[in-house]
Length: 206
Image 1: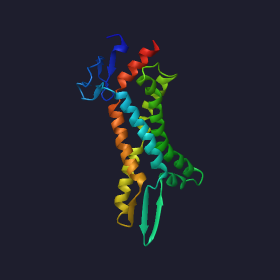
Image 2: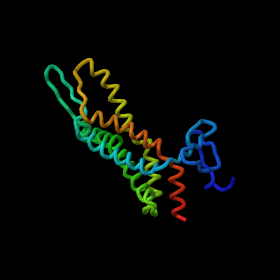
Image 3: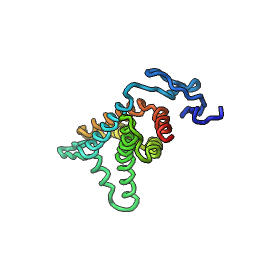
Image 4: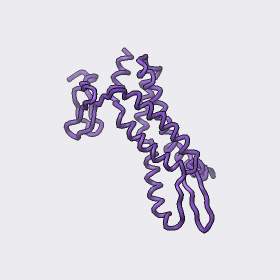
């Protein structure tokens, strides 16, 4: 094969295949590592956009609503993710840590969701992609490893195991929002057929 546009590489093992769109409901799977390469679904764009909007809404609430409350010897304190990030705002390296916490946990997941909406909204309406749609979708894919909301939830779960022996811990609404957000993000990434999106963007540029 010499036509690179007619080929697809497995994102896990880099095996090359001739790209051929399966029927709706079917999947093209890597023969070596069984990674799903192409999986067109009916109304997939609308579902991915709905999940992206849900991510933005949940992240807004999860950032500012109470996340955890701690009760020790009759004294209680509740804080949000935003409060926890501001606690590091003492200047120097701690301020950099605060910016990284907000960026990796809050801003990047929201930015990815907004970029997905920017790219998919015109496509779902059957219109020409907006300007720089290819760059926006590429950026959303490049940011995927840096979206660490799920890492934050895992870290909190580990910390709670140790803190629960020392104090009474209460879960605020933001905790459950974050948990739902992680699950929705996984569903969104699993439902998104990237090959079809790239193919649609390429055809629109011709």
